[in-house]
Structure formats: structure tokens, C-alpha cells
Length: 284
Ligand SMILES: Cc1cc2nc3c(=O)[nH]c(=O)nc-3n(C[C@H](O)[C@H](O)[C@H](O)COP(=O)(O)OP(=O)(O)OC[C@H]3O[C@@H](n4cnc5c(N)ncnc54)[C@H](O)[C@@H]3O)c2cc1C
Image 1 (tube, rainbow, N blue to C red):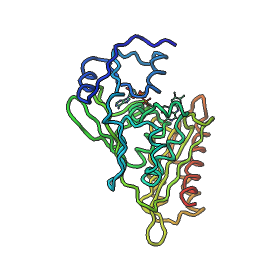
Image 2 (cartoon, rainbow, N blue to C red):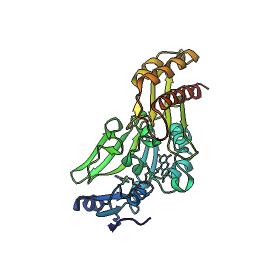
Image 3 (cartoon, rainbow, N blue to C red):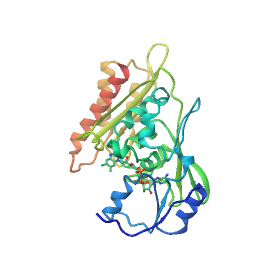
Image 4 (spheres, helix red, strand yellow):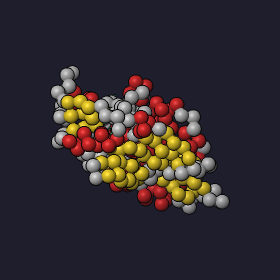
């Protein structure tokens, strides 16, 4: 399918990229192109100018320190898969990224592109929200940091201004011994999730869960954190009874839309099952 006509720029610095984005109405950044190009092909977007971020080498780094993990916006899914440090520095992230699309798409698609695209069923926005990530952005009025909880404002909609680019996402430190699980159900491997759950918790000296975090994807217009489920898990031994209550609380907490893939009731039940399996995985 032919794309609509657009002007194209390929800057080499962040300030130049921001200046180009601010220079015209309807300018858009392009990173891996794996979401944007299909949208152009379907005429869902017709930007006047595409600002290609591929030469911004500063945005390609993965940094692992005692302060957590920093992923540059141009880090690709494949870079995360290939980075052995992340197996211990952020196993939940690594597990989630394994579910993103197919190899060819993971070879080009980027962290920043996924966050900015904000598909409600995408893994990275769900991980960012569940892990209380911070998203660093730069625009014509300067730099700012947006909490993931404030970033996703609706389906394919974020708190980013038109002239802002994401530069990195910062995930808080991941303590050794943290229990975690990531579960996803999709029609075919590589498809977007019909429902997915990311869970983690730490344990106190008596083995009871503390700091429980439970996030779900694919069941609303944006990823969700389930405070009622987290409250139920905290302070408990995560045994079969707690897990059954968490599943029921998940079903009660969400109100998924119906679409061509599933009824609302099916998706609600599926999300409960994903949380159940995630907690079982965490405990195993
Ligand atoms: C067949 C198929 C299956 C897929 N399955 C999945 C899946 O299962 N899970 C999943 O999560 N994703 C999936 N994707 C999407 C894929 O992960 C995309 O790569 C990703 O969502 C967007 O990343 P990108 O780098 O390609 O961004 P692009 O397509 O280049 O851009 C997407 C949007 O983000 C904006 N943007 C890009 N980078 C920045 C930046 N640094 N700052 C500000 N704005 C920016 C663009 O302007 C555009 O609006 C799939 C895609 C396809 C084609």
C-alpha cells in the first residue's frame, strides 16, 4: 500500500529533532516505524513531516546500575533480549518483551515508539506502569520527567506534547529475591495480548508478600494497575487461597470493552486467569 506524501528529515541531535518537530503542525517522530508506517498506510495519520530518530545514537543505550535500569528510547526489543544483564537486573521486563510481536518487528521496534504509541495491549506500557517507571522527555520548553502513571491518558494517547520526544525510560531497582510473573494470552504467538498480567512482590521475614504490584494489559483503553488486588496480596502468604481471591478481585476490578476479538465477559475472565497464573509463576 502506498504511503501518503510527507517531507522527511533525519537529524543527528536531540535539539535538532525537537526543533524540527516544533517547526510544523503535523510533524511526527519516526523510530522503528513498526506502528507508524501501518498507520500511514491506512491513512490513519497523514503527517506533513517525518522526523527520523535513527541517528540519535545517545538514545540507544541500556544502563544497569544500583539505581535501576535506564533504557534509551531507541533501544529495540532485540537489544533487550540480547542483554544478558537484564536477566537479573529486570527479569520481568525481559519476560514481557519476549511476547512482543515477531522477530522482524522486534528487530526494529523501539521502547520509545511503544510508549509513545500507547497501545493498550502493548507490553512495554504495562511494564512501565506496573514498575512505576519514569519517562524522560525533551521538548521545545525543555526537559521533564513524567511518571508512567500520568503518561498513558487513553487509547493511543499520552501526556506527550507534539514537539516532545521520549529520551529514556527509567525502571526502579529490582531487588534480588523479588518474586515475579508475566502471563499473556494472544490468539497467535506474536499477536497483541487479548489480556496480559505483570505481577511482582517482595517478602517480609515471615515470607509474607509486601510491595505487591499487579498490572494488566489489553483490558481497558490503557494499561491498568489493580490497587484492590495489590492490597489483597500484601501481608499474605501467596498460597492457593490468596491467589483465588486475587483472581476474583481482578475480575471485579476491570470493565473491559467488547471488540471483534472477544466479548467483555471473556476478556474479564481471561485477565483474572492471567493474574492467577502470574501469581502462581511468582510463587513457583
Ligand atoms: C504485526 C505487528 C505485531 C505487533 N505486535 C506487538 C505486540 O505484540 N506487542 C507490542 O507491544 N507491540 C507490537 N507491535 C508494535 C511494535 O512493538 C512497535 O514497534 C512499537 O509499538 C512502536 O515502536 P516503533 O519504534 O516501531 O515506533 P514507530 O512506529 O516509529 O512510532 C510509533 C509512534 O511513536 C512515536 N514515537 C516513536 N519514537 C518516539 C520517541 N522517541 N518520542 C516520541 N514519540 C515517538 C511516533 O511518532 C509514532 O506516533 C506490533 C507491530 C506489528 C506490525
